[in-house]
Image 1 (cartoon, rainbow, N blue to C red):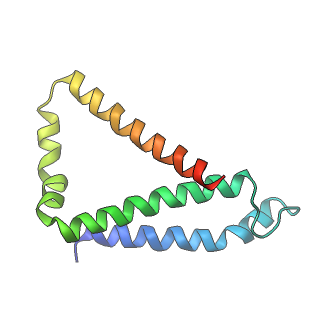
Image 2: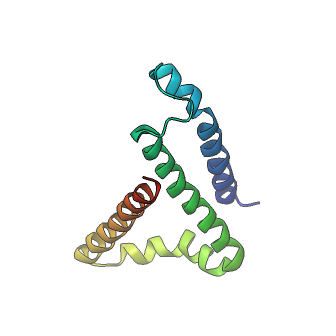
Length: 112
């Protein structure tokens, strides 16, 4: 099994372990909180967990459905990116950052 795929499964497992331990952790921080506190801390944490889970599952699906695309993304895309002009690099980077930020905001909005 590929090392990158093992990292994705490990990230999923760790995320869900933290999710299961969250009620205990929040009770240690704030003793007045309920075990499944529907407050803002839980919403932010569940949004982060949702985005990370979506990222991990998407990468696992890409690796299983389109292995050629996953191999290109893993090895050759970086070299193609380095060949771009600086303006294009910045626009691509900011575009991906905007998509990541919006995915977090929309996931948080769906939970609240």
